[in-house]
Length: 319
Image 1: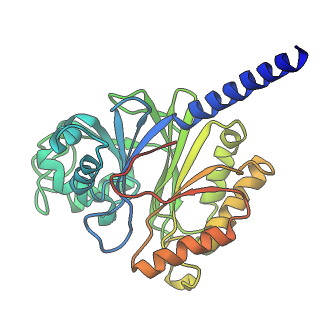
Image 2: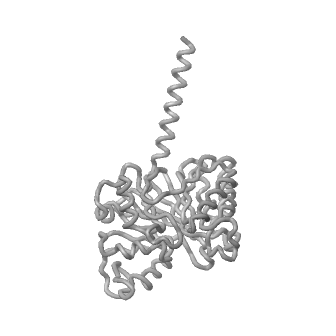
Image 3: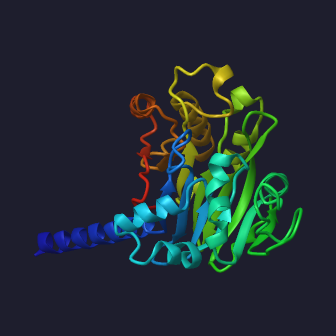
């Protein structure tokens, strides 16, 4: 009888632990609309993230929009039209920096979009207003900047250190500065929903090459969230294999530099804190042989027990 009771207790504990892990995995729903860096204009950086079991998505960068939505519909992620996903499901855009491979989808799709907010740093917003939504290169679909304001989009500037509500969602965002070919700036977005967080980094070079402390400051800020299991995953770029010389990184990471940076995070968060932690690897640049090499190098160098996720366009996953 005693043995039976012990077995029953063990089964309850196993079930509770399994349920807890399931709950942790289901904090956010992610739908990649574009995953690559480089020349594939149908598959450039853009990630939809929503609280699990909702369709209140924020789009993290916007290199490719429509092609990614159509791919997600093909994969039965969405059961509505591409127009409905664009107009109703996407509640706004977080733009890390104004390079075209991160904003071209936003620009091209703006005539078909619905009213919503575009969030960016002041510097990034000014670049988009002056060079894209300037009523010359493209109609100004915003409510600020040169020319006639169509006011389809509300351009909202984000400030370092401030937690900003994301309109029409239960999420908030806090931003951090990244170095992308110093002194050019990119942005990291720490997105929060209730007690769960996800961290998205736009393009970034390693501190050692960029001669900055931006990543160290970011790791310092999120280390407590890693310790407390509140950070559900990190989206971070790896653009080139290790063979790429430092002078030709152009503000990007290699597998070696990514692992160097994540070791810095582990030092701050504690030994084994990253074991099983999810790293979503973004912005892999063609050709295909380089992408294969990057994946192999990450696997070989993974001495932290990380769970690498290599997202595919239009295929959803959970964090």
